[in-house]
Length: 200
Image 1 (spheres, helix red, strand yellow):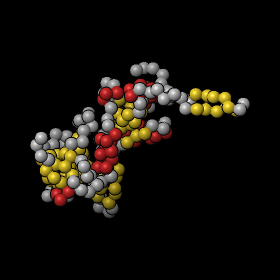
Image 2 (tube, rainbow, N blue to C red):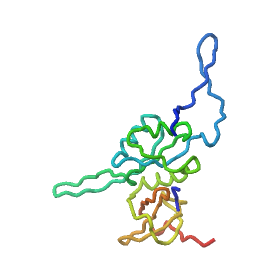
Image 3 (cartoon, rainbow, N blue to C red):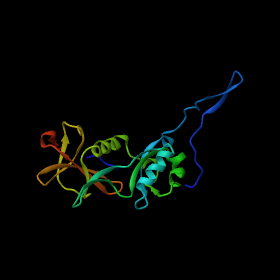
Image 4 (spheres, rainbow, N blue to C red):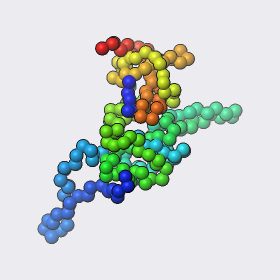
């Protein structure tokens, strides 16, 4: 199952200046960054209803972000409206170097916390990719502690993903849990696209 398992002044490393023919030029700084200082994905906790603002601020700062969302269909007597909703209220993901950009991220209005203690609590790019794949389909929030059969998706847009499958209203849904902050979502799947996981 896909799992989503300070105060210093920080700034991005800049290129080192070099002189060429009397003109100023720049060359990349030496590539000596350790794994601890490289860009990784982290989960951010935000103030209530600040998720979109934080996403926009991260984007304006040049930091890659991912705010999972879904569309809720709201039906009124005279019309139907598709309303974007945050999939995990008060949480989103961002990719940055924690040791050099962590303070800048925390300074963004609405950011409450970078989850985890250090770089070891980062989220793999594969897990983010799986969430992106699910968010591109008909995804919706669901209870975190879902019980069901473990399967692997063998065809379709979610091929290769494994997880708990639950049945709701005669439909099968794959549950994707984010253990780091105890949230989950689910996406509808076809019974023909799944294979029961075998015990190791």
